[in-house]
Length: 350
Image (cartoon, rainbow, N blue to C red; front, side, top):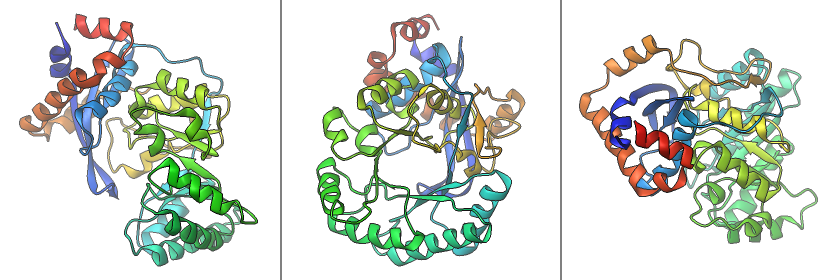
């Protein structure tokens, strides 16, 4: 018995999003059932097999192993505001604030080299809406490593002014060295903007804890992409930084891993990026995991099998085969070495 057997039993999903996100309107992947529940394997298309192996290790941990003991039962969450025109931006912010009780907003910026003016306008619009609602609200921005040092310094200053004060800027530059230079430049400001680090942690082949500490005021940690909740918690403990747990555009099933991680971290910085259910037009459950009063209760979610049957019925067999083959390649590339002995034994017995 082997990973091939487990891959054949995995269930495929392809779900429509409410708007384009990361260049797609469809979120797809596999759901894997094991003795502990369900795990989600959904690495983005651009990731190679070795990187996808980390996602598979995280999925197999959820399905076949245990998570750390929680220290809280509810997680505060932020809303994620993609790059949208003014009308949809207004609706997204108003809905998150009034229907879900969210008071912290993470806004995607730097969608193109010449998007600064649009980004300024979008942030001003968001602040205007929050003011109208009588809500101070925290606004964060995520540049996804798209700025040079000089661009970051200029753009952050303008965007910070547009909202009054940014909570933080997430991954403004690609490298730690660039962010260190940026931090030095901002040290001369009256009120430097905090730097949150995501990709430099999540995508690193050899994580340098001391180097990250030189630039990061906040660590952004995603459970599944780093190999699972337990591996993520090890990174958190090594960094010793305030942490925001973020999702990886997960279904309600995959979101369980992020919730388990956030529940186990003593030093949460604040609202976590786990409100991504609002980006899904459909899900593999009857009721998508969404915040109530700005909070999500910690829970492990299983797919509704009738819903999953309907989702899978619309997926071509060749598409399912492609995902199963990717799962097998990810196992052989790195996941087999990353998982615990307990998980490896379960896989071998499948």
